[in-house]
Length: 222
Image (cartoon, rainbow, N blue to C red):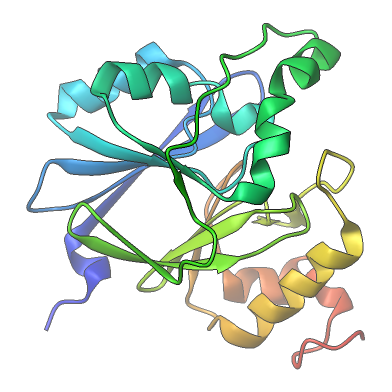
């Protein structure tokens, strides 16, 4: 019997000056598509979706840092679709123009949040069921999405590194606690699709990531 992993398509598109990974997630037998973290280059993202004949039905963000929200409003307007975010991220979202000026880039349009992810364990969209886990540390209301053996986790865990904690909502101790929980619960074969850089697996990071090597296999401090 096929698993969800067997009949889903996941496409990553790297955009903007921060080289952020935007993801398109869909079932293979339907054009309905979930857009995750549209960070920049809205016209390029729209072009890619339209070229493939994919039809976005929602934008769902892991968190609201500047590099993950730059194309949200344009996609909302173009496709008339809702935007999902955790409520703890709203202050960070609203401060995005100020943060953009600090980085010397054009401020984004701040989108309205249509649906909150607070308290949800599952999100059913586009014929798929995503499991939701609050994974704070890089940002207060950071949420990771799980589908079968895939994790779309924003800036929690990267190949060989972890998310910064010097940005709004960041806290190193909290992030290390999140990573301890992930080490306890995720099998090695879990594919990690991060917000920046290449895909990896939980097993690879468990063996080689210097931050995870500070934690023993039970998730306690080494």
